[in-house]
Length: 180
Image (cartoon, rainbow, N blue to C red; front, side, top):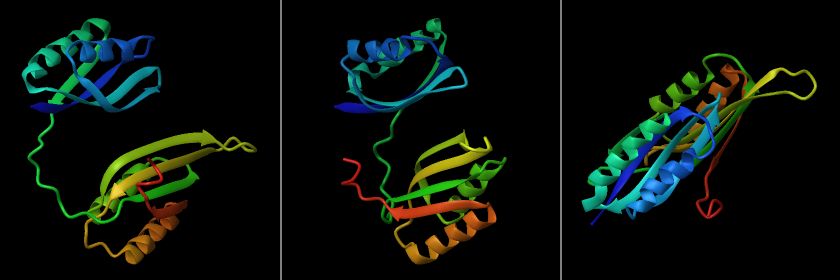
């Protein structure tokens, strides 16, 4: 029987960190299934899902704990496969763009949570506009609404939120075939 583990990694960035983690996973026969890894402000941060034989979970957790010797903080959680799926609506993608200011992520996240929309993935960034150098905020949200969502009303609510936050928003139903 296999188990899924979710691992978070954080530490000062340097060459070889992914190799150090991946080597420990491979050494114990684990499969590095999916991950989101990035460098932010001189630090390396990541989230990884690993599938491994249930009998080797404790050995892998111990092996990953040794990454602390290399300056990484690692947390491993065994996924609970027993959770009953909830009724979900179609996958959505929302893209927001506008002048940066504090609080935008909180306002967007709050609006989604109020409507029962679950965030699958959130990517944000701030870049400079070419002509003026003003900071521009961007966010891409892949999300799952509740199964009973009224998409027309939700779209209108997100447009109202964007207007209040002085953002542009593009909302569309995500076609899973496009990302394959």
